[in-house]
Image (cartoon, rainbow, N blue to C red; front, side, top):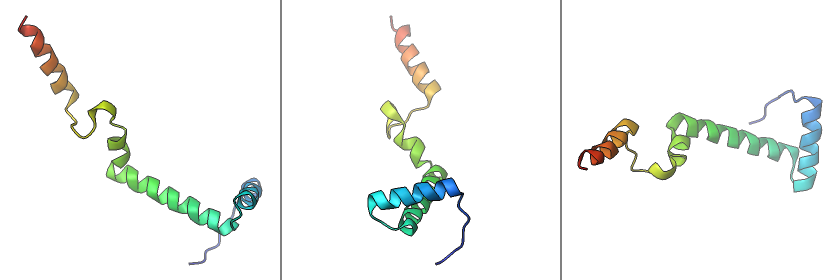
Length: 78
């Protein structure tokens, strides 16, 4: 679908430079940028970004307070 957008002059020059360097059209760069933007918002909506950054917890996420109480319960045995 074709659409009309206003792009600031500085951004347009940057797009031209990037397009030349990558040897693609400016339109292709804009399509890629929009695609990435949409994907990032979809990840935010689904919480995928949060789960990918869960670090050591990974998929076996445990509530922080429950974890703390479980660890402290070990101290009661001493």
